[in-house]
Length: 345
Image (cartoon, rainbow, N blue to C red; front, top):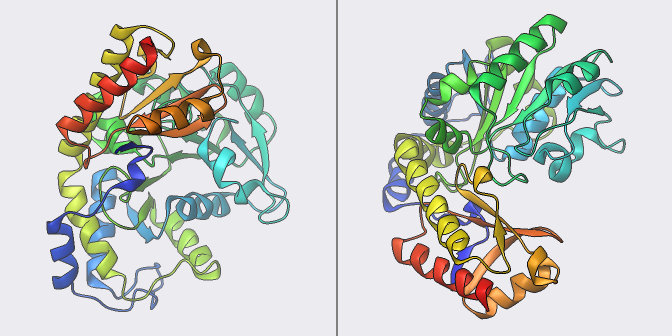
């Protein structure tokens, strides 16, 4: 069975597992005034994350959901407004920050293009409503791994500055985005005040995400981390594989992006019932539309699984194929064959 449901399915490499055995640990829960703990391996990881993103500081948390939540709490109090889009993972799936039952931040929605990038005129209208933060996502999960071009990032930055509003980037797969754009992650992060990225998706580490920003932001975030139970203890055993993963990040994501283009190209060349918008195949995700089948995506997914291919659910009109480091060249060829043959029957 070829499983392309998500890059959250990656397994740690032998080098990552070995790093756990040799990791030096301490109590990351014992924090100094800046929010820095006593686990030396965690501190190595957060220093590396800060360097790679070009930010002053960073902190290590268990999930991307927690990272984004801490960021939103650091910018907004209950009842205050945040500028977001309905296609963002932070709103569509994570939810807690914008739930009246939990954190109670009020979402104010800007419009996006098909790539999930903010439409500037819409964003400016939202900024007039006294929002406290702008949240953006690149690559965008639900739009099919699409990017915000650097030119648009610069325009968002300039607009945010004109209203004195910080920008947070949900960069869960920001290394895929950087590889696709041919730049370092620090270039993308230079347009935002804070960024969250995951080491537990395509990069292959077993657990964890980093949030990065200036020292004051990280101090606020780590304060909320303590309250919300996000501070870990001897977390060096989790941080060590992340250090290995970051050392390989650009090579891994470049290959995964290329494999996504390969499968998308096979499907487009085959024609038939399944459709792909080539413009949106920019990173390691291929969004496939099922309109031509006359069936809901859930039914198509079941039929593909019987043929030996698992794909990921998006909505009734589409599903996704997600490439990652554990997908072999043979998996790519066979997965492309299965889905292309299905499309033309």
